[in-house]
Image 1 (tube, rainbow, N blue to C red):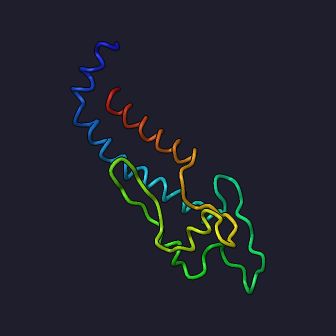
Image 2 (cartoon, rainbow, N blue to C red; image 1 turned 90 degrees about the vertical axis):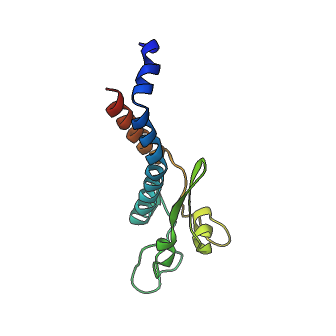
Image 3 (cartoon, helix red, strand yellow; image 1 turned 45 degrees about the vertical axis):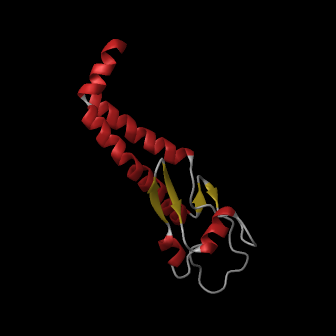
Length: 130
C-alpha cells in the first residue's frame, strides 16, 4: 500500500492543492465561530467569564455595550499563519486580562478549534483518497 501512495498523491495533486488553499479560511472561520460562541455563552472552552462587579440598569451581555468591540474581531491570512485579532484595544485587555480587566478570553487557539479543523481535513482527505 505505501509504495502506491506517491502515485495516489500525484494523481490527486490538484484536489490536494485545492484543500490546502482553502485551509487558511477554514481555520479563520473556525476561529470566528469560536469567538461567536464565546460571546453567546459568555465563556471560553467551558469556563464561564467572570461577571461584572456592578450591574447598572438592565442586564446586558458581557463585553457588549455598543457592539463595536465584538464587530471589530476578524482574522487575517498571513504567510504560514492565520491571525485573529481586533483593532479595539480594550478587547485585547479583556481577552488577556490586562489592566484592571478580568480575563474574559474570546480569541485564541483551542483544542475545540483544532479538533474542528482536523475533522474538516480528515473529511477532505477521505473524499479525495477513498
